[in-house]
Image (cartoon, rainbow, N blue to C red):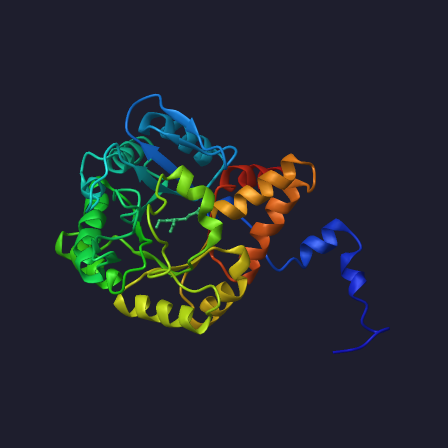
Length: 326
Ligand code: PBG
């Protein structure tokens, strides 16, 4: 390429319209997915203190939030459930009358065009808060697969458009795929949380979903933040097992992983901007230390630029509003 003074990078940055013309990355509301926390009851709205603007809601209230998101063009929602009762195996997770299942049915009835994804995991449903069933103090991988499969089928029966297993058990994508196919849901895709790290950024979520492990941590199944080659192994294993789209989580501190996964697979890649990433931006903005809107948009653009096709973010509605204004 030519060097200075032939090359002057500033020529294309002189005015807004010129900059727009050569913009490499764009964000559209249809590429944003809003995470929502649903619990039983009616007219329930319980704010999550560590996540300003986020609340646990009953299905009737949730519909209102999703209507609002849909009016701004938000591409989808992902539902997490908070059950009334927990037990050792997390049996409420596959209850066809559970909060998630009821919310999915209501959503698909009222807003059929909205993409409804469900998180498939046990941690909100087990009394110990781990993502599977315990045997001798450890999560029993193979025994958990059967339960995850029941959950996925129950969500599909309720009308979910896509299921997203987030437990990090080995072999869960194959198990869920074959359970879905066996139950007549061969057209329901799986979004696999393939590269999910044992991250401190999930802190506020565990308040929102009431899913913190009572004892120990999730290092026995979630990935070590130091590992990138392992992320590719996890991703290829899930693709082999039948994943239709791949997720990297968290997003901001793992942009290299997003980029490598996209490049290596060519598969649809989702990135989850998690609760801690959201809470940090909200907290600094509240203190007036950063411009919250601009940092929000820059953080999302960075995730997109790294290679994500769509982003799960608690900012989905606010960002969609900003994009509309631009
Ligand atoms: C459940 C699950 C978690 C998140 C999504 N699904 C928490 C965890 O693994 O502890 C985190 C999302 C967030 O922090 O926003 N397995």
